[in-house]
Length: 191
Image 1 (cartoon, rainbow, N blue to C red):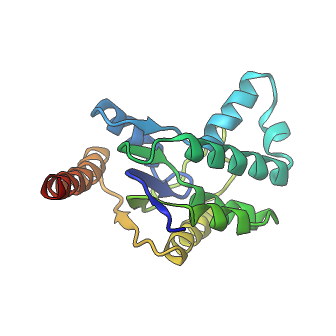
Image 2 (cartoon, rainbow, N blue to C red):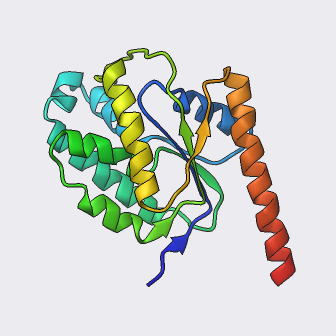
C-alpha cells in the first residue's frame, strides 16, 4: 500500500538549533502546532517530581518511550490538516542509534506516511537548558544524522540558515504559504 501523503510540515534539527523558538512564533502566526514529544515527555515527568537524571538516566527506556509516543501521536493526527510538527519521527533516529535502540521500527512507520515538507534548522551556538544533556559536538553529529535519516527516506530537507529569529520565521512561513497556494490551485483544478 502506498504511503499516505500528509499536509504536515516538520521542523527538524539538532538540539539548540532554534526550532522550538520558531515553532512558537509560527503558532502566534496562526498555524496549528504539534509540540515536540521528547521535551514534552521529559517536562511531564519532571512535573511528576522526577529528576532529569531519573528521566534521561536510562536512555534506552527514554528513547523507546518517546518513539512510541511520537508514533501514537502521528497515527492520531488528521493527515489532511495542515500543521507544523516540532520534530518528526525521523529526528529520533540519531538518538536511538546513539543509545543502542533499534531504528527499524521508525523507518517502517515512516513508510506509512509522507510529510509534506521538512525544514531542517542549521545549528545555532549551543545553549544548555533544563532538558538538554547533549553538548555542541554531539549536536553537530545529530544534525548530520537527522539529515541522513530524512534523505534515506526520499526527503530533500529545506535547510533553514542561522538567521535572526524574525527572518527564520519569515523563511519558513513563505515556504509554507507557497506550498499551500500550490495545493489550493491543484485542488481547484481537479474539482
